[in-house]
Amino acid sequence: MDEVQDLPERSREVARALEALGARGRVRALPASTRTAAEAARALGCEVGAIANSLVFVADDKPLLVMTSGRHKVDVTLLAERLGKTCIRRAAPEEVRASTGQAIGGVAPVGHPVPVETVVDPALADYPTLWAAGGTPNTVFPTGHAELLRITGGTEIAVN
Image (cartoon, rainbow, N blue to C red; front, side, top):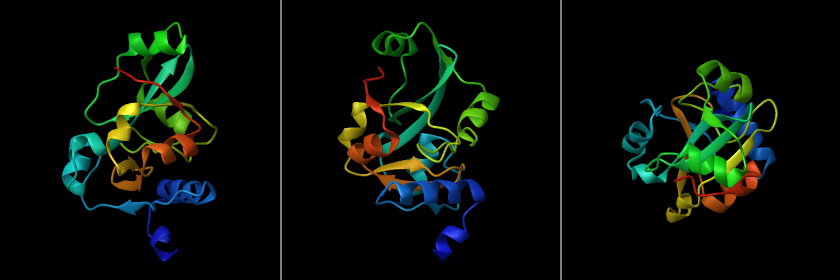
């Protein structure tokens, strides 16, 4: 538990949420930024596709968290159609923080003030170990596709 105390407060919140959800991975700090999928992959020595990007959008005026592979872009028109939404747009930085309690580049899939509707891209199943943000731009935790679906309560939908 000492390692959790050494984390920033936002990451401690994520660590507590992961533990409460029975997740196997533990949040850890990296010396380099993991703000982008490419930075995270370099810091972790993994493929960029194994980075579970947490992207926040606004879908019909409500936050939407999209968990996708670092190798993918989100097609918002296609995603809106698949979700039955009228309009999906990228959230502004202040909207990201308001809905998740975290800043862009460090948004974790859990640990938000209130649950956020979540979509999990099936492309993440291509990797046995995924790395997701841990609440700050230099914290991450390991997980897997099935666990990500379970801990987020997300819906599996292809995003491109």
